[in-house]
Amino acid sequence: MQLKYAFSFAAVAAFLAACDSTVTNINDDAKAEGTITIKVVDNHSGAALSGVTVYSVVDDKAVIADSLGLSVWKNQALGDHSYQISKDGYATVHALVNLAEQGQGDIPRVGDVIQTVPMYKAGVQAKGIVLFTDDKGKTNGASGVTVYANLPKEFVPCELTTKTSESGEYSFDKLPEGVEVMISVGQEQIKSKTYVGNDVKLVGGTSMRAGDIINVSSISLVKSSAQIVKIDDNTSEIDTKSDITFTFATELEADSVTTSHWSVSKGSSNVLISTSLSKDKRTVSISPYTGKWTEDASYSVRGTVYSVDGASSTVSSTFVVGGGSSSAGKPDNVSGLMIAQDPDYTYYARLSWDESDDATRYNIYQKTNVDNDFAYLTYTSSTYYRVDLDNYGSKVTTLYFIVLPVNSDGVEADIEGAKTVKYTIESDDELEEDDDDL
Image (tube, rainbow, N blue to C red; front, top):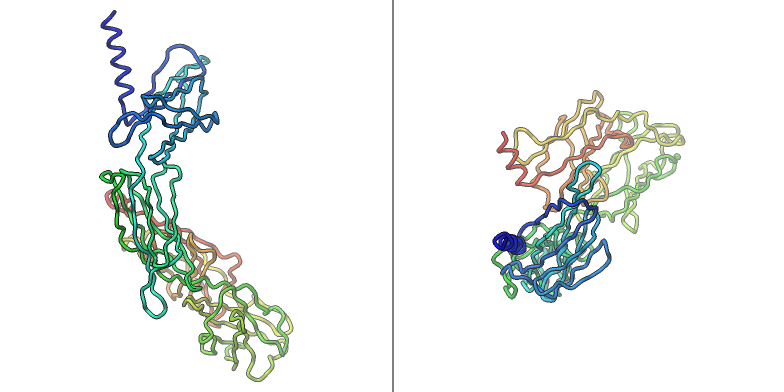
């Protein structure tokens, strides 16, 4: 009997010494509730941590762990139990414990659970600089930019932020030791221009200890073209003396609003026009050089506008003078639109569609998960387009495309009713796994 008891004590000690797993003891006695024991240890040394605050989200109650790092939670119901664990000098962590029913039939048997939770000392410093290149080609420190540090999901919070100084420098002073941290910059406005971070820095790791300093390589911001969104036009109310107007949400480049970028046609003949830009640089006006349009005549208008950031967008419409806009001359939308990983080229996607009888080319519009609206991408006379996935930054994970056919009169199909296709960019690891399966 003494040997049996000695063996039992040794087994319990082995359970409590475990540092990296959850131990579930199956209790043969019928019961509907279980006991959860949280054991908190130092991640590096494995030593038990006393004086730790363990807060149960389910019970809305906090207890202090004893000298063995233990906190015991009795009479816990089936299901998930969430705990937030904190201690001075350590990063706060989150633990999720599941109490599962072990019985059969109508007799509940809930196993008691002992879960070991590691904590990580805080105090690793990561510092670096954020740079951008201005319109004159000069590289400067980016002041007042938000820098993100993303920790593994068990940390609370798992995302930290700080602001860069006037010289573009930043520092995270209390990162947890022993883990990898991703440092990045999102979208920023600098001198009324939009920039995005072009890289994610992975720093830290198992060898890093509190007090260590990590010098992060510089993060460069890349200018991002603002999306050009048309918010209004008056093609439904043109009379013989009206100017055609298109209004956009984005400030336009004044030098780009010229007759070389706009055309109006009546039948197969181009009409001589003049163009102008409003004072707020958002509305383009097109007027007939003769001073009047022909009553009851049908016209097609098409133009390309450019933002001050260099983005472009093409718009088109048809209208009848005195009779509103018309869709009679517009081609039908494409059918068979699809997108998939390109079978012939690594890290490309292939956008394809069926040929339209009345189309001479196809305008391709694109939106990503970081954009609010679709923007003109390019055009092609083919029925497919290869998308180079290397052209997108690390924050872009999803792409959306619309393809609009354009007929010989330069009239584009109506975007209303056009099909949108979606493509999810796989990570490099996922692509390598796919290659291994081939």
